[in-house]
Image (cartoon, rainbow, N blue to C red):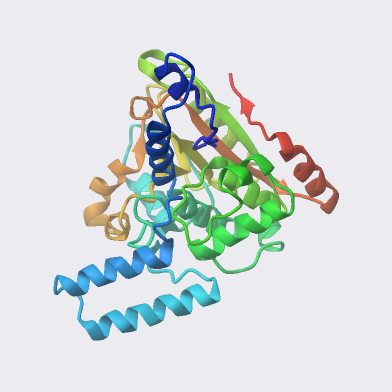
Length: 352
């Protein structure tokens, strides 16, 4: 989870720099502005303003005609008014492409598990640099719409990023994660604020979806790797009793993907591969991958190269900490109220 950075007047780093334990006001002001800028809370505007600036630059450089600028702006305003994502960054058929790949290629794997069909959502000009958490939530939601147990309690559309921001604010008003709400001053709309695993948990709980936060707080392998994380994901995909096997090694589960967070970025785990030598490989969809790059998975001519950007081995995941958000069912009204109450001191399941 991206940390909830609380700006306090008694900032310990600044106190240590001042031998008398007093704060240099100028230093604190610069630090405060840096943190605001880092977390998108510095008043630069949100998705709409960033998209407008991007189109304005395209007009100035001659890459977009003025008449097309107004047409694109009108389309954007219509999408924002409806609260529904316009689908311009969506790529469908990714899981089917991975299924076809593992049916015909990669013969050095003994088992491959795939999540239920999931659409890829890439960052766009309106959220480039800060929108990964929102895009991964859209990916997760696209999978839940395809699972009967969840689709019955969800709306059938994928919300736009400003709509997701409003949904989080509404969840805070319900009483979810008051510490997180305080960190963002209870406001996300019209900002470029990053969100992390905690906000995904808040969103899911507000929607009546049960979720777990699993915190892999330190490396468990050599060279700062996290084999315990890979083992946990394998156990997750092996739990499905409704899996169907297209071959002895390819297993299509009816499980939603997992939300994977580390400092500064998040991705979506849509599968797992076990190699003949016993090593494990996560299959990750990255919002940072463009739609054009992701669509290379859909073509047999380009899939062999494109899939290499999806497969991640332990040596590829060497951040100090990771978090997984795992969906695990639907909440009753009573269970939801208990989750809201318990989120006053929201904590993750630390492992190992």
